[in-house]
Image (cartoon, rainbow, N blue to C red; front, side):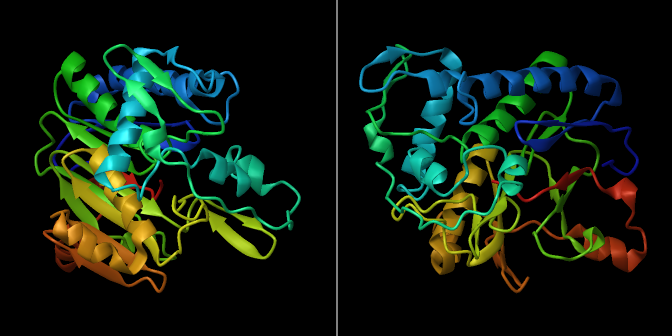
Length: 331
């Protein structure tokens, strides 16, 4: 992950169940940036992890208004904002549906469990409007029986926050990639950040498209990466809130470019839920996107960035020095 002609610093580490990358346009600032991002992800995990009984979100009393931290306030606000932006196609109240489908722990743990074969129980999500959040007072009321999962918004929100904090505290340009939710802040390296987009196909990485990102965010949602089995059925982690079942895997992966990672991920996840209607939905919102079918065929929407790998391969110059971030398809 580097940029031609630029001394870009990079650090990678595992946290919040995925691999994360921190890049700095000034190599001597990457260590400090990695410290910032690691600390923020530790706070994120302790605040809203669905897999930790001691997280603030898991421990919240239900059925009455309670005080919450400023961080959880922001995370819940992002989840509700995502639901409103997508007209409920992405909803933070799918926690119970996730659990019923078996996604109640880290994927590594789920995949080594004995195979389950009992009938699945599908129930629609209660609806994001059931969460009564008072942002100014840092208080919330979550009804009994409503289980909140912020997986479709928290990681992208955290990427935006991390990139912005690195820029504000350290100066310079930064790229933060949290398992496929990517945000940039500050001045990028000369030529921009060259991002290799993983489309979740079996192609070699040398065949993945490479696009230039100079500002904002980019996110990928996939039905082919975070998967597990229930009986003879393969399940993935993107839930249709209206059915409580996994979304029909019409697309292997959807990547969206937007003003923020939060907005890009909301749109990418909504597109997976929409299936064949996704391209029109994205076009109406003027969101550039690349949608990859199960057959590996791409569909482009709007002003999708040029694939610079085509020019580079034609010139015989494509190599490790032209890649600044390897984008893994994720939620």
